[in-house]
Image (cartoon, rainbow, N blue to C red; front, side, top):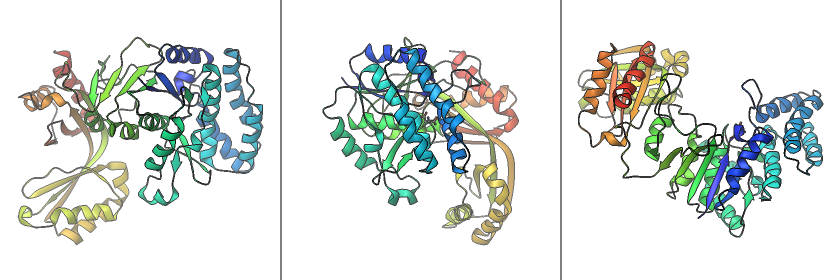
Length: 443
Ligand code: ASP
């Protein structure tokens, strides 16, 4: 049995948290590969080390004195080292870091030092080997045009080989490097991705992602009081919920493990007894509720486009979408009727370009009429259980109607995994509450 474990910033923010982490890792011999984040917040008003590094590098770049900032970062690590009674000095590391900051080696290098140093401290504390991610997580500049320059295959080959004969190791999260050694980070929260990459490379049985919550919740706790934890969710369900900002796991982290069928277990460092959420490829386990989760977002615009006989005009949809593409706008949903088509876009992206897009649609597709409606929210109700249950949509609409909420749009994916509804921004919270109470509270 081989387990890869990733610990988030709050799990490694202080010596006290390090002790919990060590207990978790050492209590199970299969936990062989550990991926740390940089020290996070110790209390709500605290600053994450990664943010301190960004600020410090910014100052270095504009030629300002960074001594105080570097001392502040140093003291975060020293507090941990002292609290753990470790015989370890990071002086030499900080000398190199200071020089590199002054030489302006790059903002990614700067940010990556949070994970790098935390990896050194954790490896020492656990007595595991330290392996620098810069040597084995590979980025390739020639892939940059595709908006993602991570070289998954080269990384997998190198990492697999490097870890083949390693029993226990700490590999810092969040960064790798180009072939020429220049450090590159993933986007914020990217240690989750590193954990997934390592899990794939060693063909782990499980990828445990330890954080400060006991898994995914069925609904946003800011909207619903004390929502229940999702016990098991499939990768596909999570994708349907993740793009709405479920927030616990970096959305790119599922791809490396998903392709190998490795499950992810979200766990709580502060409550290790909780079983957390399992993210799996497929399961015959029925969830207790018909729905797995509800997620949503405010701030959408609906662009309604009408044209008589649209249904028989070949290429109409393509021309409409061309207008959005030409203006650099991605769309979220596109429900359609026989002579009408609606494109949902993010209002903040769309607002400035609105009239340009309208003009482009007219020029390219010659519609009869275009109508724009703003301040809409989209809510995704997701659940593998909906497929085999009759009346789900009916219950959903009844719940919303009972709560006096007008549905502006609805769209059920043909996979029957999700029902998407559009409501006014101001109805967003009430709609989620009504759905939760119908499908979860009443069970
Ligand atoms: N430390 C990085 C961040 O704050 C990466 C991570 O924590 O996963 O975004």
